[in-house]
Image 1 (cartoon, rainbow, N blue to C red):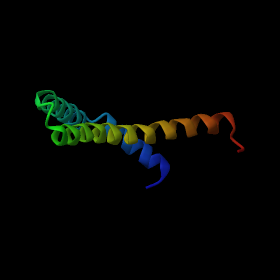
Image 2: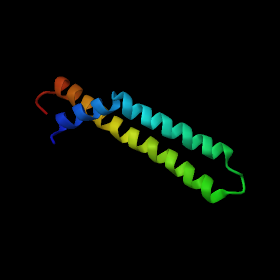
Image 3: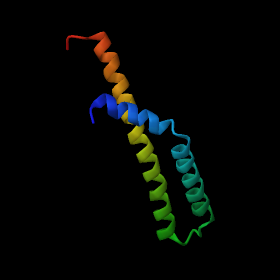
Image 4: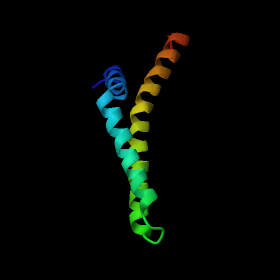
Length: 82
């Protein structure tokens, strides 16, 4: 998959309602579990927090593919001979 295809695919993922719903529902469920866990249950709370952070990293990675592609387009327009 070339850079343009990756960017297009990443954009379609970020705009996919089902994927966004999945991220949002999972995050809400995890945060609810975290909020309702006992403060003494550190292992469970840590595991939940790591899962929330992983969701954020996955979404962030997909966003960075789009942003990198967009930045490359701007640079190409500004400096076409580089």
